[in-house]
Length: 223
Ligand code: GDP
Image 1 (cartoon, protein in one colour):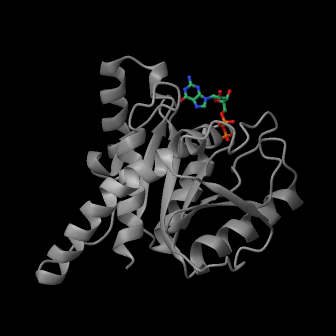
Image 2 (cartoon, rainbow, N blue to C red; image 1 turned 90 degrees about the vertical axis):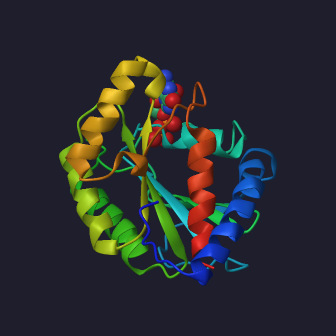
């Protein structure tokens, strides 16, 4: 995550706690139950119990459902969508100690004006105002240049000030050398360090454990 760092004792003890959590978290995300909480139209809906949450967002068809399934080790948890852009709801999953929130995909070409406005209301308010949001995993397809919609999302994420981790999806579709080249290109295009960008593949599981560790660390940093 692109969180701020400070020195000192507090930071060191927090790091120790984070690394404990990391170990616990890696197994949590792949072995412990992830429970579907529900689908909600209200961006400020309160979950019970109140826990920190990490959201996943990306363009329709970027591979978000597949990544959520890979992260939790639960193949059928999030439906791999045959109908991109249909949803205007946020889907919440409870894991031990935090929630994962699947935000609807953006940039669905056939969505009408009203649907787009409804989408913006939901996602803008969620990202800008949600008190329990610890971080955002922003998914981008490794093969494509960031689109106009991606650019708008980048602006919104910057405005929100949330810690963001970029996950490049479908890395299995590229050779090793192309993966490295694309990671560099995304870092340059987005103005990020390469260590803020995680290559992933839900198919080969490349980078899934590392992404899980990043999510768990983001949750730990809020405490
Ligand atoms: P969503 O609309 O963002 O939730 O995307 P989905 O998870 O439904 O995936 C969209 C399409 O991309 C589906 O056909 C998936 O099988 C495919 N897909 C998703 N992740 C991967 C991946 O890591 N590798 C490959 N090769 N295909 C993927």
